[in-house]
Image (cartoon, rainbow, N blue to C red; front, side, top):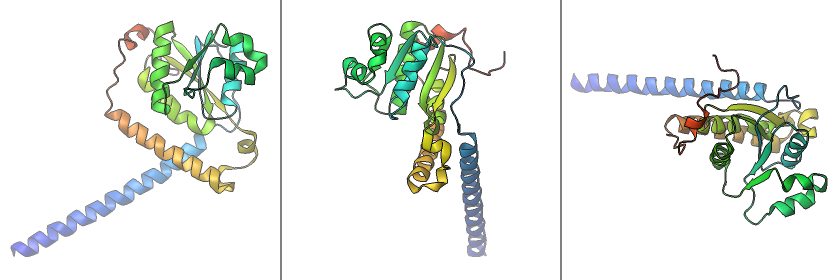
Length: 223
C-alpha cells in the first residue's frame, strides 16, 4: 500500500513539474513577443532636456548620436561608458572632428565598464559626482530595455530618458528577416531576463549616491 501511495505522489509531482515547465515556457515566449513589440522602430524625438547624457559603447552610431545631442544643448555633459582602456579622448575626437571642441570641456570617458552592469555602475558614479538628477540614455534600440533596467536599478531616483539608436537596416527590414539579427534580438531578450532575475537578489551599494537623488523621480512614476 505504501509503495502504491508513494508512486502516486511521485506521479503528481512529475505532472506538477511538467505543468510548471510548460507555463514557464509559455511565459518566456509571450515575454519575447512583448519585448519585440515594444522595441523602438524609429528614432524618437526628445520632448525634454536632461542634466547629463550617457552613451553606452557597442554600436557604431551611439557615440555620434550622443555627441549630436550634447552639441544641441540637450545635456550639460556626456559620459561615454565602456570605452576600451587603450582608447583616449583624443582618438575619439579625431574620428568625429566636428565635435572635437566638446571633448575639451564636456565629455568624460569610462574605461572600467566591461558589460551593461558595468555601464550602469559607471553612470551611477558619474551622476553622483556631478549631482545630475536626469539622464538621457543613448544605446541601440534592441539594447535599450536592458540598459534602462540596469541603470534604473543603480539610480532608482534619477529620471531616465531613452534615446534609442535605430539602424537604417532595422528600420527597413524586420528582425526575423536575418538569422544574425534574430539571434541578436533573442540573445538580448535572454540577457534582459537574466538581468531582471539577478536584480531581484542584487543589493545595490550606491556609496551614498542614492541619498543625493532623493528629490528626483523616475520618468512616469506616480507622485
